[in-house]
Image (tube, rainbow, N blue to C red; front, top):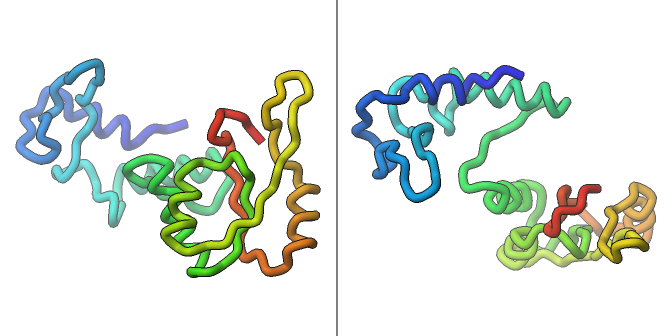
Length: 162
């Protein structure tokens, strides 16, 4: 897989940086911040990607077999909340697994969503959730016709994969 954004950012190593972020690419604590560059010519624009960010999003879409991907700063918590805000309206009912990412529940409170829960399968050997089957989703939707969205987290909040 091509990595246009990574390649562009690593090409800036060693250059003087007078833009954000304030750490100016120094190695801080046990993190390597050399590729944390923003707001500089040549690093593209996350809000209107036209170069390496656009190419990276296209590469990710190909890798996942989807029409489009969007890079979101601040990790999965922000991405999940954005998805909820785009897919639902206040008061909607969302079908979710009980072991969803915690940010789903934060977003649900913010949007005043009603949640309908999927319990999921349990692995008899470990006692841990083993995922949600398509059949359980279909059954839950048949029982809850008022559901407007389905939200499944994979890996789930505890690391299990559907």
